[in-house]
Image (tube, rainbow, N blue to C red; front, top):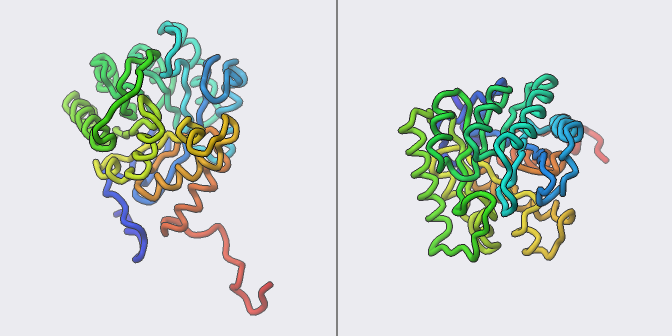
Length: 307
């Protein structure tokens, strides 16, 4: 039985199957915030600019994220952002060796950021536990792959075809439209046989959205969480943070952490972050403020003589 938050705690969403076993780890999303480290094995990733493209560097980055407290790592071999097409085999060759090497060293939840069904299948066969589909399961073949496995899935909102430009995205109400999209894709997944306890959702900050859209999604994140599925917030170092604060890449950590905390206060339960150590500290502090966890120790003003 899930223990309720203490009196005075912020109102939290009620999740479908809040206690989830993903891979070899179990999470209670009713009172737990999970940090997902990011490992991009691509030469053109927007943040690290190819620093983890090499196999050894990618594996080292994943294991470093685990050491810093990440309970999930998200491995990507093809960015969603506009750029040249990457073949399915090339993407498989990028991600599968990372999955195999990390799985040999750790029971961390391994997520693979892909919109290609064949990449998803090869990744799951290699030991991945979760597929992070930035197209929101628009490809029926991806739905079929997932329905045939026990892997979890992150259903993400976006509008464009991957690797293609989408100029000036327009929304009458970005939160309402994202919510409707996600609800529809969840229904399709359920109808295909993907059980509710395998589904996570992501409103897709900055994916075919401008800065004002992403700020609105962050401010009204609770409306996404109220769908009832644990929600991933991918806010790390994104352009909406940079444009809001006038900060270049590499100078957006503080803004990213602020956005992440606001998302958690409004129901986010997975934070997809580049800077894992600071993100874990922010998650643990927010959990304590919400009454989800106790401090690591109590010393200040607890004795007869206090400094």
